[in-house]
Length: 216
Image (cartoon, rainbow, N blue to C red; front, side, top):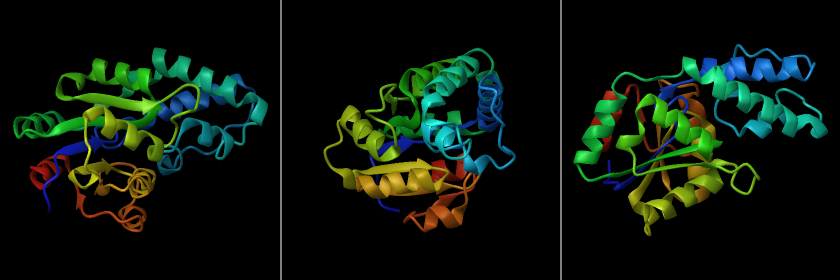
């Protein structure tokens, strides 16, 4: 694989196991809105896309209640939901090795940036990262196609051929495709190799250890 100096990591399903925290927070928000909660057994339907899209699409929340639902979700996630998050085995070792080899590392997530910062702080990921980049509350930066260019600017990357987005879903792969950067998929998260391959993935890893070998 060619050399990449700027590595952008999705958070949920790539660095951390977090589907349960998202599920319980969505369930809480739907109950608080007194709306029927959809079947959340398939994590691939709601781990990855912007939260607003999940409320609008999968959850079928009326437009006038979406912002309220998102606020309910975030409050519960902050207080309760994220306690079930954990870092995948091998991630700390992978990040440490990549930093030793001079790579610039950033989290690139559709989570709101302050939420992503809190999650990374609590799980001990922040010391391994050069930047934590996420969406904005006002919606001006929402999908991966918005966040990837922002992350590259934050890292000071002027040549997108030297950058790689790493993630576990087609949302990550499509965002990379739209941003003009290569994409590498992980198969231990919540998406499928087929959906990522369809968006131009240049390769796949089945564990953080395998990913470390491929990137270093």
